[in-house]
Image (tube, rainbow, N blue to C red; front, side, top):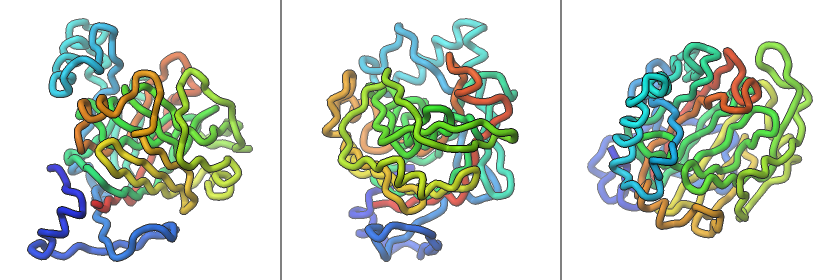
Length: 311
């Protein structure tokens, strides 16, 4: 199902049933009032969600040149043609509901393989609210406007690891830009916890486009609850979207993607690969060359109170 922007939805809302207004803690003052959020996670099951493997793109399959509707078939065929690659194709991660939260990890722990959990429905212009509690180190994120493959689209960084970005925007197969206002690092503690969370170094291999707003690390550090649940709010508006993020009410990043000049990125590419709508999802990263610092063996990400308001 594709959810219409609110400007169209209002024309038919008089004929629909009422929505339940949910409480929102820590919403910034500029959030529109009188509009309804609806849960997209029931707190008990994974109904409405499905898992897909995290697949890389070999040189033979160029996402910028292959029609969007053929990408999944072509990529799955390439992975399925080799028994060693088939293992990656078969990996969907381990996703379960524990104490009212979605919990995601590698399957089995330490396999080094990644995955995504995506909504069955697609969303155009929307505002998303949720709470996250990732282990340390774990490289995860919130997928926006994601292609059915999961690995093509925009991602809100939740890189809870050394030199990770949190609250910025990454372009998955969209020029691999990393709009990160800051990075974090810290001291690994037992139980997948972190101590002395502080500003980290840059990962210069990714181009960093100019942001319309970029919070300093000091704003983030005042808002972030270490080793605890944190509320994310994300607004995504426009066919080539402007994406804005908040953490616990503090504005972190605003990026008008129509202004990006990073190599390999273009508004035309966004329109061709993603169209006006896509899936919301969560990531379990593979280990790649970073090994333990990308995803510790046994680490998980957690997500709860997930709700969307159509704009």
